[in-house]
Length: 392
Ligand code: PMP
Image (cartoon, rainbow, N blue to C red):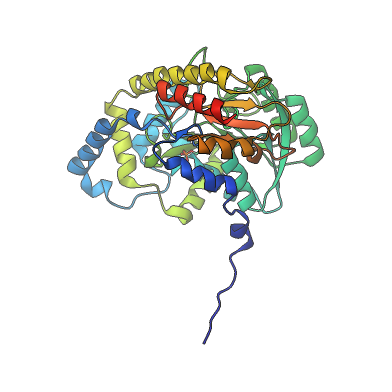
């Protein structure tokens, strides 16, 4: 007897693998210099300090560290995060926060808690790809807003919002993925004003803010007048600690936070108790600021190496930016170049990047590409740019 099974749900079938994803899977080969994935430098993980933290909690409080817990997250860890946010200018109590399994889960929780299928969200164009995928998976309509070198244009945002009436604005205002751009303070104030005027939720996704290489930090959008009562701020340990821990947090108004915690309970009960306890121990005993200072110094040198190498590698007429922080340089090749075709050639020279087209919601620029500078040491980065030059 032959039996069949029903098809996959349409939403799961739609977010399939792409040719680009398949080729990028090849970047794991050790000989490839990869500017593709945003992989933090593995040799800069504080493996010793993290091992010590796990050892401590498993020795001193194994019964608590290995037991089920509550969905809002470890109170000590939340208090540590709240103190950091407060010290950086955003008054936060432990009770304002929920721990998440990475910022990515925070976004999924918000989508479930705030949006119905068919609702609209407004995003920067280009936008973080996995956010677009999370919205698509939930059947959400995505409305793009054109961005310039400084990010989203508040007047254009107001025009789009008035016409489309979205429920939510999703943004990465600080060192955006994919462009590395930072939204200046005056635009943040204007964006907050637009959100308040039209009654929008804001999701401020901020995994990169601590990776600042020059200049002063720009305050979180969440703290601007008009944004305070409507912003869910997402943070992450992935870029300053270790992405494999899968720990992030969500700071949101009480009603939204409670809804997210209820959704989280259904989704994964809670984030790993032992990981949270180890992170809390690390934050209370190790010098996280010193770690971050070390990352900033190393990544600044890597950014500079990439910028130096690109000047000789990319064809005449190419443009690229000089991000003040984060992980990414955004470049645009001259008319006639297609970054996806260039990627195939680049892979034959053992160097990779990510074509920019998939990050766009509106009309994609085929010549756009994203280059991450954090994974390799400066000399490898320079070798990568020489290979890129050969690919051109
Ligand atoms: N948001 C943005 C903008 C990101 O770039 C990333 C990481 N690629 C995430 C969220 C997800 O981070 P996490 O590892 O904390 O889930």
